[in-house]
Image 1 (tube, chains in turn brown, red):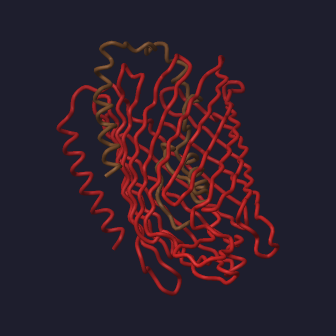
Image 2 (cartoon, chains in turn cyan, green):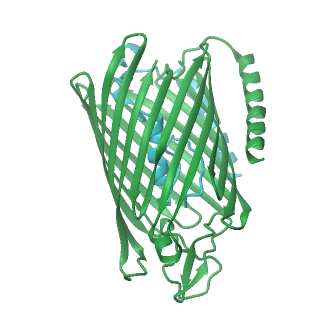
Image 3 (tube, chains in turn green, cyan):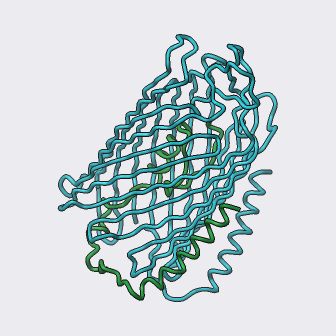
Length: 77
Length: 367
């Protein structure tokens, strides 16, 4: 139930974003994003390396999630 | 049987999603990820455990709207961890994981559907992931929503599969361009588990006597992570991340990571990072319980401890043919140290600690 509430809040916030755009214009133009497009600026440069690193932490630490990386479960605990 | 039901679920989801998305159609601004083929060799060694193996990933566009991803991952595990050497015999086993994914682009959205399965002799984990990322605000903001449903079968050598565990993961996130040189992201994930969540081989200690561990059959956790990455000039890139985690087993955890990356010449890129994780223990963790409780575990992963990691990634662009393909070789190395504050080595009575190393060698072809 709590999770459903969170998803509904997220959807509501997402729906409000275009309305916010009426008052606030994007301040970084597409032609100013050369630096951001460089591969060195990727938060995750390789899917395989990222997934494997996350798996190593997942099976040795008690914390999990919110990393933006999805793997599969395992009986590694 | 489990695999068949997984593929049936995938087929149902695929049918529903692709059907509704094809109906949406329209112009689009988001591009599919690049075609890529990756092969990786990996090894983790630490605390008496060595896990190594290959991993493969191929992603290929089908037209300008769809791409398919296939992946394979193997772990050849040799386990002589402190749990194993103090209560059982060292063993070897293999884990194979397979994934099949579909990306679909419609207007400013990227929809990803992935089915994955992980197979060990005594554990099977199947999962289906659905993720949607939507560019808004002139491409400066990307909002993402995702859901994973997992079905596990839990077994034990000599007994076969005797129980199940179900998982639900709900996630949402946003990535925001802050300036021409900085961006940040925020991610939240809620996870619920239901079923057999312990380890049938592990024992706990009560008044010094070994008893089977008993953990609750449900768990609910939340995690929130903030990340930022910025170019300080001439591609001197710094990044930082912080994650806070909490669950209803009483675990609270903080994870920090900072890194620095730069190019050396036009072909080499280096990335160095430090990662620190600290957590409190679960309410029912006890190194050697002095009272009889319903739930009891001696799983050190659920105890209070910290670990620090120091890592270096080196990427070398071996060949680039503009407009056709590029080949990048990446080597990654991370040294870790785990220090436990409650869990002791029963052989010495001292608090347990161990060092570990993680190495990865990746060849990536973008075409």
